[in-house]
Structures are given as structure tokens and as C-alpha cells.
Amino acid sequence: MLKSWTSYRTTTSSTESRNDTGSFLPKKYGQGIAPDSGRGGVRSLTLGLICSSRCPGAIILATHDYFRNLQKEGDCIVSGFHSPVERECLRILLDLRLPFVLVLARGAPQRLPADVRSAIDAGLAECISPFSRSVVRPTTATAYQRNMFVAEMSDSVLVPYASPGGKTEALCTVLVANGKRLVTFESVATQNLIALGATVIQSVTR
Image (cartoon, rainbow, N blue to C red; front, side):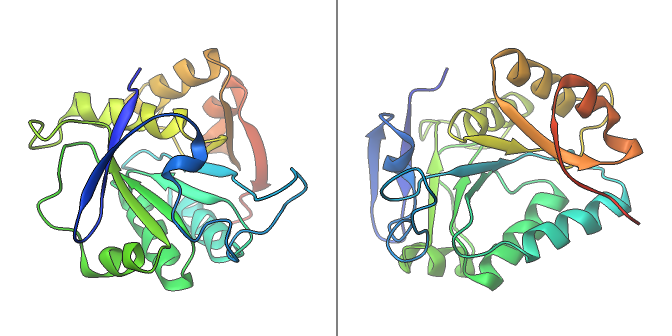
């Protein structure tokens, strides 16, 4: 289990040990962006996002709709934002100025996109990596570890789609066995996730 991470900002980077979820959340999360949600005090719910690279069109549209309907008092999204669906969700979060945490599958980034850097400067986002600077490029192994880290740091994990027999489905099997709460959409294509125990958040109507 990865225990620490480095937080990369536009001008400085600092290493933090993992103590609690709130220690890696964006600066403004819980300061006007995320009000109390009944837990008492500042809200610190986090929603992980992990999706297979290939995804049925109906689920892509359902995921877009779900993210477009997120409100500023909603969860902070934690993801690698690597697969096509995840990248599109990042674009939506940036458009709506909603809080997110970008988790890398490598060490220090060569260069962050300008819109992500702007979100970090505004206190709306964080870019973190659980890997040392010696990990200079993502691999299948680091991508798996990154997604496991995303899940560990999230209260629940949204998995719009996991290809049957694929790496994402295998990861979900491990997560469920470890007691992590998974959520997904109701669809013929997500029956493998539902069979694992994922909670349905809405049906795919298209």
C-alpha cells in the first residue's frame, strides 16, 4: 500500500505523509466550495473515478450527464484522468470550476496543462503522485498502483464501465474484497460490476 505522495504545484512541490483524506484536498475544498453535508463541520467526501479505456457510447453519455449535473457542494473527484472518459470528465470539472485531485502514474510531471495549472493556482485542484521522481514514465504496473491509490483515498469509487476480464474489473474485484464502496450505472454493460456488489446510482436510458 502506498503511504505517501508528493503534491506538485506550479512553483513548488512538497512531500506529505498520508494522515487523512483532507490533507491532500484542494485548498478551497471546504472553504465555500464544499459546505457541510450533514457529517458535521467541513465536508470532506471524495469520489474516485476509474473507467476502462473502451466504453460503450450510452455509458459515456450517462457519465457526461452525471458530471454536468454535479454541484459545487458535491464530492471532490479523485482520478488519474487518463482514459478517454476520465479525460472528458476532467474537462467538465475544469469548465464548471469544481474541485478535483489529479493522481499521476509517474513521478514529477514534465509539464501540467495550462488549465490544470490555473485550477491549482486557484485552490480548486491538486496534482499528486505516490511515486518517486525516479519513476519517469507511466507503465501498466504504475497505472494499476495509481488506480489503487485513487480508490484508497476516496470514500466511494465511481466505475462507469469495466471491460469484462480486463484490468479495471480485476481491480474492482480487489477493491470490493477490501470493503471499498463502488458505484456504477444500471446497464447491460455493467452487470459484471453489479454482480461484484457495485451500487447503482442511476439507469442508462439511451
